[in-house]
Amino acid sequence: MMSDSIAQVAAAIHEAEPPQILGARVTTILFDELALSEAAPPRRYANLMLDIESMSLHPGRALIVSLGAVPFDLTPAEPVMGPPLLLVFDLAEQLVEGRVVDQGTQRFWNRQPRAACAHFVDPLFEGEGQIIAVRCSLHDLHRRLSNFAADHLAPGFEVYSQGVAFDIANLAGAMADDGHDTPWHYANVVDCRTLRRKLPRRRGAEAVTLPAAAHDPVHDCMKQIRALWEVATDDMLGIPSPTGDQVQ
Image (tube, rainbow, N blue to C red; front, top):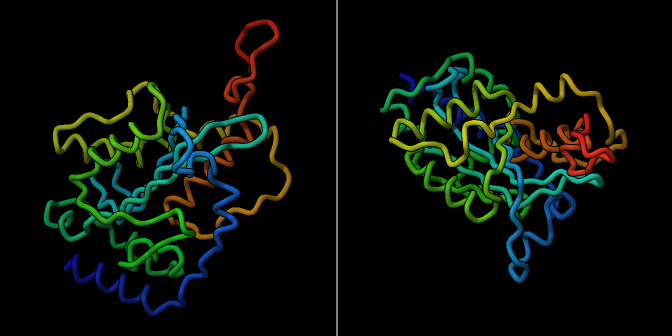
């Protein structure tokens, strides 16, 4: 029954208007060109933004459709983003293993434009030249995230998401099911939604062109990084205090 329902959602999405694919210009602006150059030495980023799309709002056992991961640094001039990772997971395998699917969440996806769903509906999906969907088993999550962290992130990197009780909890739970710890230290998890709510906006009032496809997890990561940079304190940007104290 659940498989049929998901198939119906996918079929309905296929009937929607085709997505408007953004040009490479936006990607070039948003992603760190030095980091994307094969000739340049690898840059190690201090932070990682994660975002999942799912078929449920369950806090630990949701069926995970996809994961977006974007390494980044916060600088005074702008947020600098590294090469993104987009994983799209096997849905049928997760259904067999009992991960949770909500009818309300399926109805939500059925209402979304195809641009929001193309990354997991279209088997040939490629976005903006730099974002290529990697289709894999959820059981491969730990290996792929660990390799990604080893390639792009500095030791002791911090992990951000929109709240820590959903995206992070579901990812950690999936890895724990396979007997793995997360590739990050538990004390380095940060809730960017709370920071945005509690800190005043300090910069970024000017209009910036960002990808428009909501619910694509890589695009969501990019938007969340930009929003975090807008409220970041001097300390978060690496600007030393004249007195040597932490800048508030």
